[in-house]
Image (cartoon, rainbow, N blue to C red):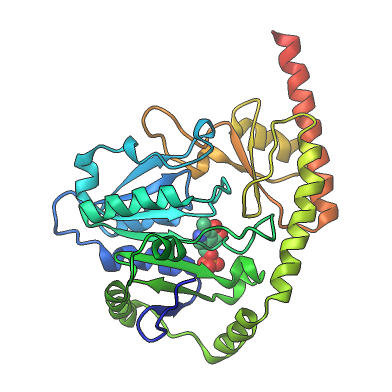
Length: 322
Ligand SMILES: Cc1ncc(COP(=O)(O)O)c(C=O)c1O
């Protein structure tokens, strides 16, 4: 792993959500014509709001099952890339669980070099993965491997929320290009607060302990092992590469599936189309729901039975009407 200078290349933040939002305000120059912020689609909703409030127009890269949810940078023409000031990526992805590989990073860095945009790499699921021997590749490591000292125009966002199960504590950090972090720090002197000493102390304890993170991963792994085969009896369920979501294709529109699941089986899932925007003629979240395996094992298994029962019922209804 590359080493970082704590004085210039790392900043603590009060959770990554605020940082992801504030970052766009700090780096986007809305006085330049037709500013663009690119983000994956479906996506963590903060990116779009951050782009709009920074005075930029969001442009989307669809992540689709046919490409195993990989980004296709060719989806956007050069004219859009040339106006792009910031690109968000999320790896491991929310909701797909997809991890960007070195080749994707190489292509994204090439685009950033050509067009001068900043990359915000949201890595808040980086420590929730299924194969203990294969942690996901992070942006800083990819830059290091590709010979990019100083991480030009690259900043990563990390958090204790998922790794240590403390979303309420509001603790994370950003790391990367020192020139961009200096701008971000200046912006934060106006809108942000320093992290309070009790949270700092708790954060130091959490970052210094790996045992609870290994145990957290073990619990997620157990849940995936129990839940995915149950779902797979009636639906095309697969475990993700990383993260704690099952991104599940539905036999009927996602909103209808989620509604019936909640109304008839008391299970809440998120309709995928709510996490995405129509782009190039498709809503890439459509016909998918996001299932978060954050409840205890017993509840996840019970819920998986109910999801599977609904899917069986829908399959029978569709067979009867065809
Ligand atoms: C993709 C992604 N990024 C960032 C966050 C924000 O996490 P936090 O603000 O707790 O660090 C979340 C939370 O759900 C998320 O899903």
